[in-house]
Structure formats: C-alpha cells, structure tokens
Image 1 (cartoon, rainbow, N blue to C red):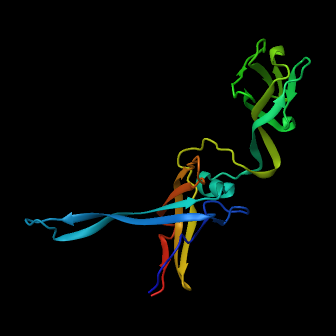
Image 2: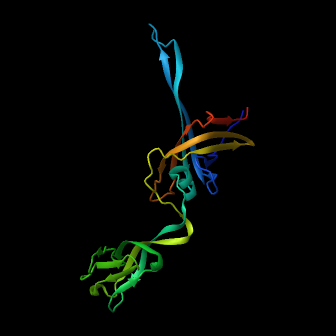
Image 3: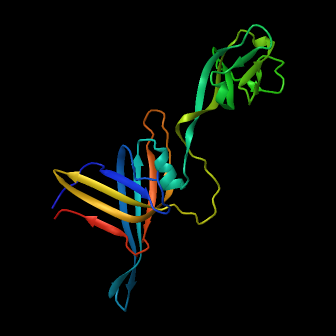
Length: 248
C-alpha cells in the first residue's frame, strides 16, 4: 500500500528513428499529469432490463501533461518529429530610436547584421503607429530595407523619438525548428515514463509506444505560460502496451 503526492516526473524518448541527439527528454517543471484508461463495453441483453453479460470492446489510453518550461527539443522530438537546427528567431520589441535631423533620415537597428523582418514602428511619446509605404513623404510614414535593416522616415519626422519592433537571427544559441508540411501518416512515436513518489515509495508507469496529438501554448497576461501536451498510447511491435509498477 502506498500514497502518491505531487505532479511526479515524466520523460519521453522518441522511438520511430534512431541516432544521436533524440532523447530522452524530461518534461520540465511538470505541473500535472493525467492518464486515462477507457474501454467501450458491449452489453448483451435478453428479455430483462439488465444485461446478462458485458464484454470489453475497443480500449484507449490517453495522457495529458502540463509543462511550465519551454523545451524546443522536447517539442521537436515528441510532437513535430523534425530535428531542430542551431539558432534562434529572436524578436526586438519596441527598440528605441531617434530619426536623424539630416537626410536621408535613416535609422539602422541594433541587430541589422542578422535582420529578418519588420514588425512595425510607433512614436515613443504617443504610441501612434506608423504606416509602411514605398516612399515616406509625410509624417507617420516609413520604409524599410528588409535586407539591411535600415528604416527611412519622412523629413517631417526628423528628430522624432520612435520605437521599432523587428525580428532577427541568433545563429550560435538556441534551437530553431522549421515546421514543414509532412505527408499524412507521418507519425512521430515515443516511449513515455511517468513516476510519482511519496514517503520513500514510488509508482511508475511505462508506456512503450505513444504519439502526441495536441500541443497548446496558452499565454496569459498575469501568469506563467503552462504548455499542454496530449498524447495517445498504442501497442508496440511486440504487441505490448507497457507496465505499471506499484508498491503493495
């Protein structure tokens, strides 16, 4: 007999491919895990109200986990099934800048060398948004060179304080996953291990073949982002589901 307390620990290791750098991955800062075992039942009735016998039909095991730690490698291995590359698609949000007083009224952003894309410009004092155009002939207009990261403004905005948002690359740190349009039937699989413990006794659940069917990223204004991952369980090549280990 034992009791369990807390969210426990959960690991996943990809199994549909072999090689280095594919796991195992621990679900970081685990908030909770729910494992559901469900079967359909087929009752046989005669002339009376209640069934004479009930047999199990199809079975289903589903799992839900809430994770508070962003883990690119876990998402790439267990959900997308695509190897990530090195690097990061980073964002500079509301970077301060001042339009020069002299032509060509251009501003080069801080990360221009690895610039990717424009995300807009606003006035620092009022928050009023600029409109991107081909030729900035009036105040509140701008153009940007998407190769060099140079923003050009109208003479009417000379000396104006601005805030610029854009994306850029970090090539040496982080992991970047390219999400591609895979053929139907492409199904990353992994084995899952769930463990809980209390007062020196532990319970473990091993599931040999799983595939994830949902990843949710619910950001909130005044709370942590808790990622929801759901996956289903199937039999492995030997016809085995896994095993549950408990203390009696």
